[in-house]
Structures are given as structure tokens and as C-alpha cells.
Image (tube, rainbow, N blue to C red):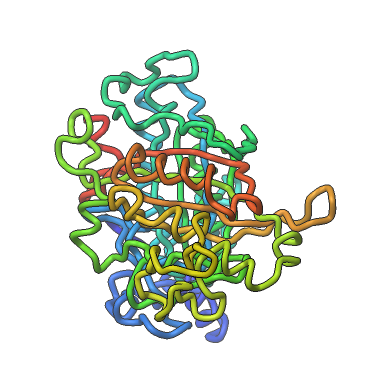
Length: 431
């Protein structure tokens, strides 16, 4: 497809034009081409400026934004579909695909752009990203169970017989204090970028495009990724100050991705989800002020790792496998029976692992003056029945950390495979 002009190219064109004493229409063409290999993610990796300028292909075997090296910023939105017209839904997915592809390449959401159209019509881009580089933006789209049957059991779009059995509302786990206004959704869009304004721009424009077909149900901003999806990334820290995601599935582990992340052939009705995944979203509030009053030793016992290096309390370095049987004092083990690292360890769950892309969040303060903050947990799994629900159930019942956590939002989505040239996200579902 014709990709048009980049946002940075537009700004550069304006600047050059003004310096030359005039602004010719053709002046915009001096910007970086989206196909310029100098702008590719691989060619610029490793520098802060490069990470902001990085761009990732939108189309491929799998959707971008899953194994893509986790960016630093997130805007996640869940939508209700407010039309009963299947053709309108398909048209929306086509328009979202086109707009998302453009924005991930650093272009305006529409071919006319923020300032290129008639002055008596709304522009097809909102304009707040003018002058910003692609920011490593990825846009990942998922389908909730309500897209297949609504709360009354109606087959709204002729998709009911294509709903995978495991795509249903997650059970209510012990300790859940769910806010319906922060849970569920028929569609979801995960926008990740190095620049928060680029991520917000993407969600804002997709919501604008969807006016009359979808309505935002809830959304979440995130900062400071709490997982690493590549061996080249350093393990980040969550708001408790501990390294998070040490044992995460990495993009380089192709066999592990096939085993734990990608849905295989024959695992969804009609195979429309083969090459896709399931996305679990959980908004987990942390009682920050209570945690901050706990002694360091207790904090480390709750986690089962040291706060400094992230090494397991049984010894070694961050990536050393924890020795869950190492004897401690008074007939106990060094890593406590209710330590987080033990309760969620794959050895206790049939070897199940997840690919997590979580983010920290701070949404101001609560009614008591404490931080409304925590972890926006995002995890991609091959099967939520085996790779998430048992682990979350064990954590809710036995994990010492739960005293400092409260889950306030929850949702499950099926994330279709990547999109071929001239196709659209989810095309295999509607075929």
C-alpha cells in the first residue's frame, strides 16, 4: 500500500520550507521514507535515540507487540462493539489495520493527515504526534469472548461456533476486587512505544476511527515495562523495587514460544487462531505504603529473591535456578513455602510458562491519600486453562505477596495471528 509521508518528514518539510521563504506543496517529500533501512529497528537498536526512532513491521506471521522487545510505555484500551452489523465490524477491522500500519511506520493515521485536508472537515489524524518519530510503536489487537456471544448468549455476528472453548470470562479468584468498569471488553488494543505520546496517539486515533461502531470500555496507561521479552534486555523492576520477569519466555526461545505462547493448528475451531495467542490482562493494585514499612528481610522472603541482584535466596545470580528444597533453619527451607518464586514456579504447574509484557502504573492517589498504583499485568499464553488459571489460583491462595496486592481489573482476549499484505487483523475469523 502507498504509505505516504512520515510525521517527521512533515515537520522537516515545514521547517525547510519556512527557511526557504515559502512552503511549497512538494516540500513535504524531503522526509525519511518509511522504507528507509536506516530507520529499521535492527539498525538502530542499542541507543536511546535509536529506540525512539525504531520502527517494527506491522504485518507478519504473528502480530507485533508480543515478542517485540518490550517498549517502555503502554496505552491499553478495551472496547465494546456497539453495532450489530457484521459488515460494519469487518470494515472497522480493515480501517484499524490500515491506520495501525501507518502509525507504526511513523505516519499519520489517515492518508490526508492532520493538516493536509480541507479546513471545513475533521482531519483524519489528531495531530499530537506531528514531529515525533515512530517510537517503536506496535499495535496488537485482540478479541474478547463477548464478540462471539454477548451476556445474554446471543450470537451477534455469526461467530459463536468459532469461539474456542477456553476463550471465556476468567473465573473470580480469591482476593479479586474487580471493578466492572476496568474489566472485560469485546475488543482490545495494546499500543506499546518508547514515547507515551506516540502510544496515546495510536489509541486515540483508533477510537476516533471506531466512532459509531465501538466505544471505549476502559483503558490503562503504563510506564516502566516490568518484563523483558528479549535476552538483550536487562530485567526491569516493579514498584516493590524487585526485578520482575526473570524467568519470562524470551523471543529467542522459539521452541518455548511454540510450546507456551503460540496457539497451534487444530486448537481453535476453523484454525482461525493458529499462530495467535491468548492475552490475559489484570490490573493489580499494590499497597505501596504498607509494603514500604516492611523490613528488607521480610520483603525478600515474600519474593524468594534478593532485592539487590534478583538472585534466588538459595544462592547464585539472577538467572540461577532457585533450589526450592535447600534446607534452612528450624526445619524450614531457605525459600519459604509461601514465597512468590516458589508458588508460581513452572515445576509446580506442569512446566507452564508465560510471556509477560506488564507495566507499572500510577493513577494518582486513592481516597485515603495512598498511591493508586501497581502492576498492569499482561501475559500471552497458549492456553489460559493450563498456563494462567492454575497459576493464578495457587498465587491467590498461597502467595505471601497477596497480602499486598488487590486485583481491580481482569480480562481475557484471543489475539489472532499476524496479517498478510492487503489483509486485515482477524481476517481468518471472518473467512
